[in-house]
Image (cartoon, rainbow, N blue to C red; front, top):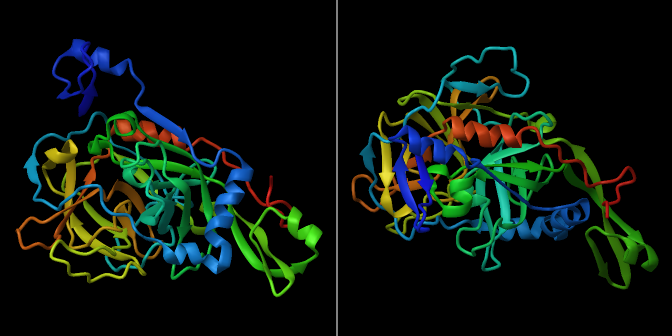
Amino acid sequence: MKRILVPAGGAVLATGLLASGMAGTVQARADVASDPMARNTAQAASVASFWLASNGAALRAASAYPWDSKEVRKVVSKGGASPDGSPGSAAPIGEEKAPISRAQNVNMPKTTGKVFFVDASGKYRWCSATSVQSNYRNLVATAGHCVYDTDGNRDVLDRWVFVPGYYQGKAPWGIYVGKQAFTHYDFDVYEDYDRDYAFVTVYNGIGFTGVKQVSRKDYERFTGPKRSWGGRNYILLSKDVGRLGDNVGGQGVSWNQPMGKVVRAFGYPAGPHPDGNRPYSGVTPKTCYGKTTGKAVGASWLKIEEHIGLKCAVTPGYDGGPWLANYSNGKRLGYVNGVTSTFADQDGNDRIDYITSPYFDGETASVYNSAKNVWSGKIVGPNGELYK
């Protein structure tokens, strides 16, 4: 377990807990950082309208978020990551009392989708993500760098939404606007990629059911997507599609699991390999399967000392996607044991062949447990109006 310490002089130091006195100093600071996204229903309605206007034009215009590293490099094996307590888990939605089988065939989970946002340069971007178990069935897991703006020196990325099952501008289960983001303090403050994970609460989903011509007076009062054309005024009719977990389910979450565990990773690869080859479109999700590395992997240029790795030849866009242990093909459920954080070229041929994830330990569980108990609410009223 690595921690970022701030000595009396103010310099940042990464170190292990090698002395009990030092451990006491570190533990006095909370591990969990939280920042608001859409602070109220009016802001959430505006965000949903932004992405769904003109039949999802902004969604279709978005591109994969460029990975935070300037170049893809080889990662090195270390022995840094280790459990900081007993193994633990939260069962997937609907499987709280049922065991999960170990089927090997692959069906893509309904929980997987894309998170869309506007980056510091104003560009429309996306990463991969998944719905996970929570008390209010309203929680999304993804990479920390797909939530917190590491380039623009802001807290959270702008206009953040989750779209499960996204396909070519379509949102089959609605759009879910981010309400509150939770991550580890060390990522929020120091951009420590050993903590590159985030959990985001989302409002109830919003969907649109059609277009209606209205009077000029009603058009001006309407808060949602609208358009004037040919001297006529139109509004887009919206509906509350309910809670995320009720619509697509939610994966379980596990921590302090042994190294070498078999996982299935899911996500939407889209970016090019270092050599410029672009084998993926980002349109459909892809999967990788294998054992995580028995040792941690390190990348000093991102402060990484404790990641786990997986052999997988995918490209950026895949980041934020879940690594699922004990995945059941029939139920399409498993336990999130990591999220794709970085990409590596291990054999030096300018092709990505390896991905890494933060090791999920007890501090990850603390962030998750803080997020899973937070309520969100809805943004569409009983008559289809967007709340102000």
